[in-house]
Structures are given as C-alpha cells and as structure tokens.
Length: 509
Image (tube, rainbow, N blue to C red):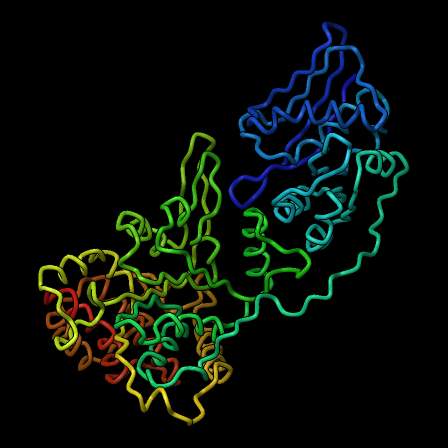
C-alpha cells in the first residue's frame, strides 16, 4: 500500500515543493521517517500517531515508512504533520488517493487532531501555484494569507477529520471569509511638518529618498536626528504589487506577517538596537532566516547611535550595501536574501557629542580619533550623503510658521522617481543610486568645463573612485529634482557638500 502527497518547505524566502511518500508493508511494526529531516520534522511521527488515535483512526500494526523527497533538501518546520498524516491514511485506504493529485497540504497537527498555523504559507502557496497545483489546504488561521495568492483555490481546515472529509467528498470550493476591520497598515505618526529648523537636513533627506541614496547624519544630542529619521517613512513612495508580494513573503517566512491586513503596502522602516548581533542584522542560523536588512527590503534601515554598534557587525553591511542582497552559506545549502534598502544612520561627533564646539566639548584629540575610527573608511565610502545636524536655536524651536508637510515632499519624491523609472526602464534598475559603473558616463555626462571642475575637486576632497561615482549619482538626483536633463555645476556643488563631512570629521583627525 503506497501513496504520495504534495507539500512544500521554506528555503530562504522561497519554497521548494516536497513529495511525502507513505508505504505500508508487512514486517516488524515500526514507524520510520527518512529524507534529510530536522529534529522538529522527526518529531512529527509522535504528533501524527497521537493525533490519528485521538481522531479515531488506528495505525495498522505493520511497517510504516514515510519518505520526504527530494532527499537533497533539508526539511525543517512543523508544517509536514498534515501531509504525513494524510499520506498514511491514504495508504491504508481511508483517504481517496484519486483526489490527491492536484492538492498541496500544509499544517502542523496537535495531539488532539487540531491543525495549527505555520509560518511561510504565502511563499509555499506561491510555489504550489508555480508548479501548477490548483488546490491548497492550510490551517484555518492561515487561510487569509493563502488567499492573497490569486489563481489558487485555498481551503482552510480546523481539524484533521475536516481535511479527510474535504478530500473524500471533493469539496474543493473557496468559502467566503470575513476580513478583519482594521484601518491602516502600520501608518507613520511622524511628519516633516513637525520639524522646525534644520533646513539643510530636511533637504538632504529629500535628496536621499529621491534617488534612494544612503544617508548619514552627524550632530550633537538633541539636534533632532532620530526624529527626522522617523519622518522619512512619510515621504517614501508607494510600492507596486510585485514589491508588496516580495516584502510580504519575507515577513511571512519570518513569522511577522499579519494576514488580516492583506499584503504589506507601506515600505518598511526598521530600527534595530545597537546591541544587535551580526546574525540578527544580516540573517543566519543553522537554517538561515532573514535579518533586519532583509526585513528593511524596499524601505529604510535606520541605525541610530551608529558608533555604538559592534564594529565587526557594521562591516558586514559593506557587501549588502553594494550588491543589494546577502548570500549566506550553511551546510543546509546556500541562501540569498534580498536587501535593497536605504541606510539612514545617525551618530554623535565624539563621546560627549559636542565636537567641534570646544566651549562644550572636552574630549581629547586622541579620544575623538578613537571614537570616529569606529566607522571605517570603506563603510563610509558606501554612504552617499553625509550631513551635519547643528544644535537648534531657541528661535527655531519656538517658531510658529507652518512647515512643509510630508505629503508635499512625497509628491516631489514620486515625480523624481518617475523620471528615473522612465530613464532606466530598459536597463534592469530603477534609481540613480543603482547606476552601474559602466553606465556612469552615459547617465551622468558632464560638460568639458564641469569635468575639469570635478578633476580639481577629486584631489581637494580626496575622493576615491567609489565616492566620485557617488557624487555624480547624487548630482544626477538633484538635477532630476530640478527637472534638468543635464547635470549642472550647481548640482555638482551641492553633491560635493554632502562629502564635506568626511574631511571635517574623519580626515582631519
């Protein structure tokens, strides 16, 4: 007696289709499971044995062998319980084998036969659709998440007995479900209209998001760096459906997805504490899971108090900032997680926070040098815009004038993004910050006079090849914001100003 059932397992943020084979033969009564299984999958046989007994189904006193194929993929998670139980019941003739061909089963089973929710259902249903499987049966609590994938009949079940009845009776129809009445989807409570003063910083934020450039803010405590960073999500452009699906898949695999709200519609803003480990930041584990940089995919990763992060942890960001993805290799395989985010960082200029105001700063030159050296030059080179956040004067704090709102700024950002999308639609990227080196001369072309000017600035600012290209990319963004087809001298000058802090805070130390 033999049967086979379809299911899926998480592999990175994607999924792999798995075949659960069950064979019942004569021999010593034993329940064996094979197929490169993790400990939680091996434990499934005890959960399945108890669930079948409590649902009124007795296992035959024969040799039961369950194989999860292909054996080259490591199986993790508790979502194999349901397909294993159904495969065994099918092998003994309780479940109709003919109705299993076009079905994918996902779910954990409790000892009482109740089906428990699992993570990553969105990714697994997408994989089932990709393999032309038209019906998925999932835990009832995961049903709304499964139905976010169009073109697949998703059915929810509360107990193992319900699944058996659905399959045997062929009741493969989607029943209506009530969506929760929850307004908003992580709406941001911060707005640039709340920010008084700091015009240069507001401008730098707009330039940063208009071209999706990395941003570093340096200034004393209380200058408003953190508050301004929290306002940035309010000027981020909307995501298209493809971006929403990809981000939702990442959060589903991580167990952070709220299916009641539908697909994630707002770009993420992640703000990890400076005590975070390297694994928590970039992802990892025996079977790697996404880290903060992947959870910030398509949005903003804000690192407050940048110099308080472990230096080795920060250095790991160098490769993802360039490649927009992170590759993690483990014994279970090689995994690639998307990490296309805008890095926004804030830091004090010294230990006490008040350098270069020598009336308030009492740090020695050596201590300032040690403090600033926590940020390496290679990491600094990957930050496009460095801007100073000066101490606010009382007249700025008490100002009663109406500040420009985030909605107005966001409209300008969206216009700049549309210009870039049209320009790069045939080149596989979307923003100025992503222009590859071999296309710099094409999209950031300078007049002969401006080329000579940049040659002079190259030596004056001690630029590297990378930082020179970043200056040109930022200038291209500023030109787009001005509606200019060509990069003008004034655009280059503003872009160079955003490299001035390198010289002030790092090179002069």
